[in-house]
Image 1 (cartoon, rainbow, N blue to C red):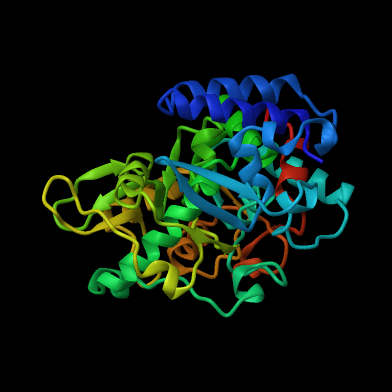
Image 2 (cartoon, rainbow, N blue to C red):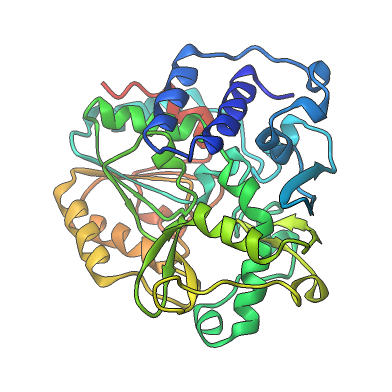
Length: 371
């Protein structure tokens, strides 16, 4: 059963998409809803599904059927709404330990220039799956693996398959909302506690929550990059180009992947038309670091400097298995910075941390007073 807050923000997202998705409006409205603490519950049956905002209907379902109707695309929910559908990808965790909460509170209180690094585990509570979580991550649920950078660059059929899947998954992926953990970190920044935030995620949820002192280490799915001339395009603009090129194309999605795409058959993908760059006719790619690619060296240097300027480091929702994030933990360790880790399950750096917590990010972080 969704909270009133979820219903209100979903309704706003529908209005928001009509008003050209103005980034300046979204954080203000969401912050209002968050501060109002609308936590009452309303049953899903309080409104017929057909009358719910389109974004809320898409959030209800992990199996989506898209079809064109006079040039307009609609989504048909295949599953009923439930709290479980939003939290489907959150791994099991023990109850909050009051003593551990106190330890994290002391850690934050003593920090004056706190650097926070977040991973996929902070967004699972917003309904976005991760790759590695036990039993619920993509690797545990399926034998599918993400597309490799080299394959995407070299192969037009692979790009076609990727963009077809991404086109179907984009309305749902782009409608995900920040959860209490994202809002807590945004508040810490506003109060001067959080010095810098580095995220390995590409979902823009920190930006939606209002974070500004932010480095998106692996880029952002809300931007598209031309591999040939470097031109950047908002992802929502490309979505409309997809629609124009594929007015009669239809596909039924099965499952949901961490980075916004869904699972389609090869037969479904074969007739999908992919646009090229409007500036040079080049190949288009999400402005993210694919598996097998490397983070821009200038961005790496920038984050290393922020780590060296910090006096403590908190990891939130990351197993640190990917070296692109793990290297900054090594830098913090070399600088003898205290390190705390909040993540369900073991991480690559547990032996380097002075504090390890196995709790849900959205339950624990809002309990901490950053002042």
